[in-house]
Length: 284
Length: 294
Image 1 (cartoon, each protein chain N blue to C red):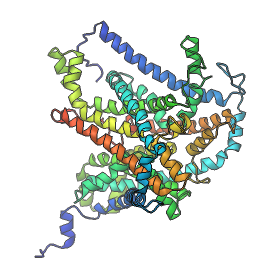
Image 2 (image 1 turned 90 degrees about the horizontal axis):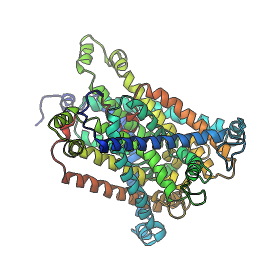
Image 3 (image 1 turned 90 degrees about the vertical axis):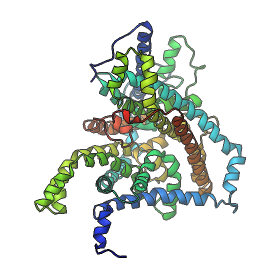
Image 4 (image 1 turned 180 degrees about the horizontal axis):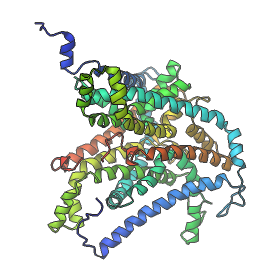
């Protein structure tokens, strides 16, 4: 794949061009690591003003942050929201993807459009009307409201990741199982579930990572007791000056570690490109 | 009139059977939580506090504090999207042939996964007056901490949208670029076309649809910027973007009607740009993109 390159007609200008591109990318990556490194360094700093590095290092900010921001409660809420969103979007999304992949029915393209729109529209745009409706029905500010809001982008995401996955399973396998007398239940347990499992796992891991980091929808629908970690972090940064900056950074590091763990697990099963491609099929 | 075939069989012939019904829970969820709120918001936006039909829209377009948010947001979102796309395209072309492509994509997926809030907190430190970036520039003699202001203004928001937006644009572009059949390029190279010519005559026409979609997706993301505009910008002035106006109307003035109107205006402006981009693409569209290997 990478070996067959076009004939190398490289003169000076094209070499300069290539060097410039790598420099650009390198500059970006250096700054990215600088941003992450600054947060980590600050979270361990005793005092860090007007110098390249802090005066000393300490771990006490993590304890402070844990108490000050009630991180125990916030993390519990985060896990509840993320867990519920992952399970529900799997239960609703996978069967829907199966139906979309296997059947052609009148109005299918309209249904597809309804599934695509929440992935294309930015959360803030549809989040404000959604939060209005949730607040008027009494679900606004509750855990249920946060979970419902987060399902809006994740269910279509699961559907669009799973459709190509279902399509590549030969329908004759299912027909063969039927011929041998398998009912729908056994067909599902013995044939479909094992074949779909890798796809479901990949889709749900991506949902998990996206839901931990989903700021806008949770922010618009969460009340004081239903904040997830990323929203709590926003309020802490927003009210910077009230707390020590190191303590906010300690919270940011906890958030970062939580996200990274799941990202690393997810990347064992999916291609990084899939995290942005809104459910577009993988290019093998 | 009635055929002898039972209803169930007739429905099944049209693709409606037990399996099709599996789509219903997802459909109900999205109709209830996406379409209904949208139309509810649309109707609500025409029922302002003053009782007139167009009160909210009149208020929005007569109050500079409100209508200028459109201009402010466009002034951030359009340049950022263009910068990201222009930078992403050549990088995607180089990374496409890279052995360690996955390493690069993994590093670049980090800021997207970490999200704008964390990036904002990091940038406040890193690009702040005492941060490493400004210190390095000072060391190189390119300015002084008092002359370089990169946070709490336009540039703070701009940079944060580059940090999270460039990887997004890049990864989308990369998936389109690697979808183009290398045989086409190799054939052109064999016939003596240089890199620039290959790009112009092979890649650009094939990539145009993908790049248009990438532009649209990147643009709507940048246009709906919220956390970084508050945390890294000057939310009362130069970076008072439209989502801040909508948020304030809903959660500070509790005027859901006005908030819905602003959300509708936000959606409409996004739609105008997206439609304009997709229409202009058809002007230089030269044949089926199916030539690109999916």
